[in-house]
Structures are given as structure tokens and as C-alpha cells.
Image (cartoon, rainbow, N blue to C red; front, top):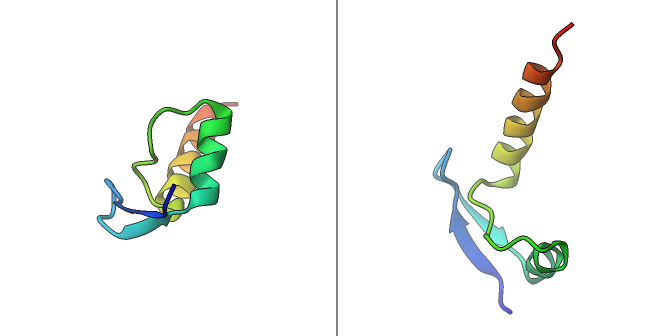
Length: 55
């Protein structure tokens, strides 16, 4: 496996999907490459967590 350059679907910025990350994804059984950069993934997760916290 070689590092892959992917374009984020949210911000359009290129990010690197490293060999180590690819191995991790494969180990976890994920079949698709990420579509968001790490920053957008973090923001999306925070948004999801805030939405789920209804008191």
C-alpha cells in the first residue's frame, strides 16, 4: 500500500491517507476510504455529539 491523496468532500482540501491509516481501516473492516479530512471529520463528530445531547 502507498499513501493516497484524497480531496475532502466538505472543504475541498487535499489530505493524506497514510499507509498506517489504511492498515487501521482494513483491520477494523472498513471498506471505504475516508471522504473528509481529519479536521472536517472532527467537526462533523462534534456536531453529531452536540445534536445528540438533548436534555
